Amino acid sequence: MSQPKNPLHGVTLEQIVTALVDHFGWPALAQQIDINCFKTDPSVKSSLKFLRKTPWARQKVEELYVAKKLYQQV
Image (cartoon, rainbow, N blue to C red; front, side, top):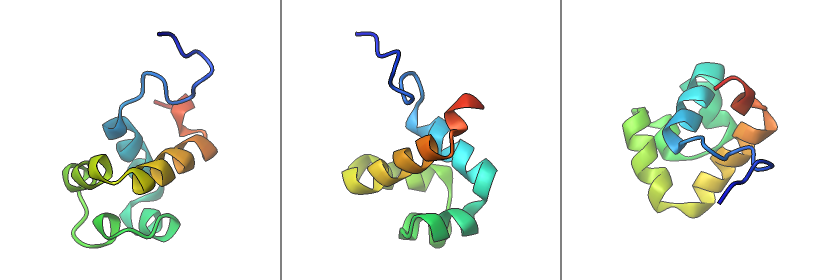
C-alpha cells in the first residue's frame, strides 16, 4: 500500500534515531525526549530495542523527527 503523504513512509526507525542523534546529539536529544535510553549509556542499538517495545516513546521520537523535518535529509 502506497503512502505518499506519510512523511515516515520508507524510513526505518534506525534511520530516524540516527538522524536525530546526528542532528541533536545524545544529550540534547535526551532533553527533547526524556527517556533513559537517551540519557544513560545511549546507543542506537539500545534505543531501538526500547523504542520497539514502547509505543508512546516511539511516537514521541517519530513526532520530533517529523517536526524537525529531518526526513527530507535522509
